[in-house]
Length: 448
Image (cartoon, rainbow, N blue to C red; front, side, top):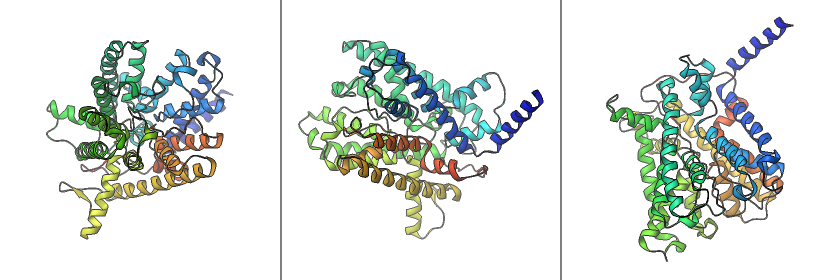
């Protein structure tokens, strides 16, 4: 009997090692969703019986995918223990489900297995040249440090505002902000703090740090400490794209959104900046009513949500590096060039192909999701399109239709959120691709 069990164990390990990392990532996230679903369905987690099993699955998937869309109220329908479980699921989804386990392995001074390395390479979209062990240690340490500092700042803000349970609210929102999850303990997000500069600033800093990605943060740290002399190509593109998208989104919202025009200039700039930031980083908080925005502003937010954050970060969306590489392909085609390059450095051909494929998969997934919502929901097209873009981009912004979704509509959004967390291309690879074939190691590799 023991020999038979040993043989089964050996065969299962061999089977796992031969699986494509994308399939292991998919199975990992599915397992966490199922565990979280089972926990959240326990009576001790709920204040009321308003949430159905489907609502619990919706909330768990939204937490693991760091989306923030909910069909019930976190403060009204969940106990403190339920909120704590949701926060843990957000943390797991934000830094990658394998990171904590791998950190324990590294802390014991053991080498990561080849399977774990492949999974992390897939989860974080890392260039092949990155030192994975050093990177993972930095991820965990950086995450805990930033969230602790953010919680202290938010605790001061909430305490000054007289909010009950200020400490717990600060910890929860710090994790939610850094993991770009958008889950809040208030039913109107941060609309009550629209004019509070300190809350806007703290949430924005946490969200940007999470969204730009661990690659950039470690790269900047290495630059400042003298370990390297220049930023990697990936970091340069991420910082460049993040800055210009933030500026363009803020300027367009400030000048063109009618609901912001009555506000004083400083509050108008702050509100426009916050909404551009929250869409681009996919954090999903709001200080103004999304349902009241003009159609032009809604389209602008959809564009920012689709482009999304950065690889190896906590945000979702298409990823700004992928979008930038796609623009590079267009530019090269117009110039009649065969290679895509930035700042004189050519991008590996396999990475540009991945970027083009990612854009195609993403657009197809978004169109299918919107089409299905149009078939099942009575809400307007712009609301359905916005909801699908928010779910696929793991953003969490909504024009107010989430709570009223039909059961079929909730299932559609659950699938979109899960697909968005995996990435449409990675999701397709997990379903259809076989063994893993490594990418050539190049110094000018780009994370997409």
